[in-house]
Length: 408
Image (cartoon, rainbow, N blue to C red; front, top):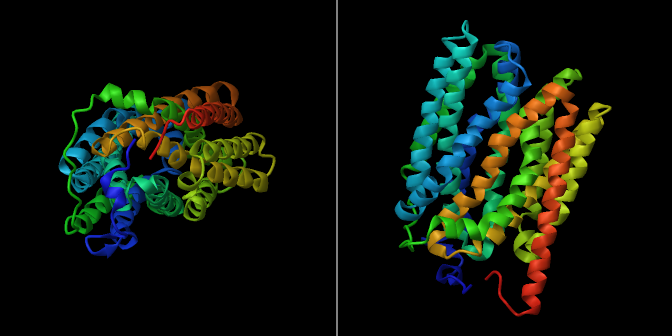
């Protein structure tokens, strides 16, 4: 594929260094995802202890956000391509704020748990749609600023903002929940996206690229192999978000520590190593990463002590951090620049499928065989992702032997 024209531009964007132009986008993604981070350690406790439901419904509530995102990723990608990434981010923030209202409404039915959890599920679904627009718009914005030559770095930086929000939001959410209950989480979910809107609206957006009439199925055919690899590696992320709090509480440890350890290591890895997918063979980076992730999930499975469990969370965060951007290089480089937002939406949809359907499935497994089995199953899924990375690496080597360019 020929090098897109925008990748040959100077290291300035609208007269500013590219990193300076990207900073407001990163900050906006961080603020928007803070509400999701605040809810991560809280939702399992609210559903299990507050409403009295089991692990399956914990997984269903956690996964419903991602299940709804499946249906909206392509929609978000098309809006980002046709109306510009800024428009997609603004739309997502407005939708995310509406989910906070539904969180509040669910609390009014706390004496009727079935109605309460139904409304809560709807709120999570609405948040999933908002999250789709925010992250796809933010990624497309970053890719336009940094260019396709720096795909892995762009995805790593935006993802770092997202996980920094998760890491900081987890202890904040735990503190607010312990002191004020779930109503504080609902209020934050409504107000923080609205505050972020005030920061986004004055920003100068990037122009939409005239879109090629590319068929969605053609884009899906281009990205499905790296997408499946990313999906399998994301099963472990679903296990961390939905069940690490329950596992830690069951062992007498603080609920938020597992995810915060995961997220902190994840962020540091992306900050210092996020460029590896651009500099080296992306499938090779992905292969090493998923093996490390699988080792971390294995430690969480056995978790004989807090130290071992935290080491497992750290290794899982280290490994998982580079899988998505490395395989994202494979996905983005196979489509024209005009369909980059659509490609990112299609690629990310595979993660939503894994989290939206895999997390409730892990909940069913936990109900029948215990919480430890969740992390054992996630470890096996990560090893499956390693098989995908090996296949992509062999394909890249074959292409080089045949002198076929796979990526620009």
